[in-house]
Image 1 (cartoon, one colour):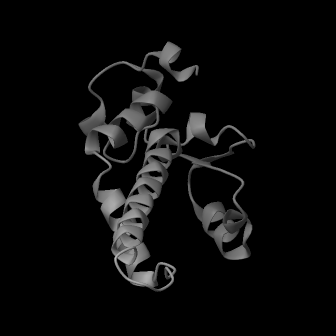
Image 2 (image 1 turned 45 degrees about the vertical axis):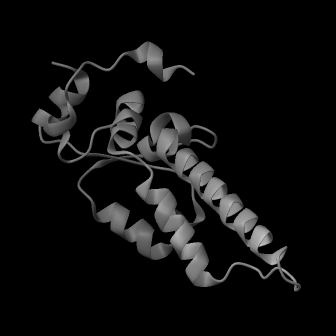
Length: 140
């Protein structure tokens, strides 16, 4: 049994959060204080090692968002070259569509891999415990 599995079996909960400004509001501070959990604040620069979604998913999402935006704007330029007029900034709906398309392109396997890399497991941890975490993979 791994340390993580033993910790969960004992009914303990661990809340790991970063130093984002939104976590420092009174409302969030009070909500966190009310939790019956061990709380750990991640030092600056360490979130990619300790927060599962920051490890792989967010960077992948941002990259895909950039790719889709560039593709959209390239197509817009090609359409504009056939007629006169200035290019327009992307409107809100276009940005939402690009973000939605980028999020849909993030695979469930990538999400699972990000949890495996950090050794962090959520509430449904038995469903994703399919191996022992290799600590060497955590060192980047």
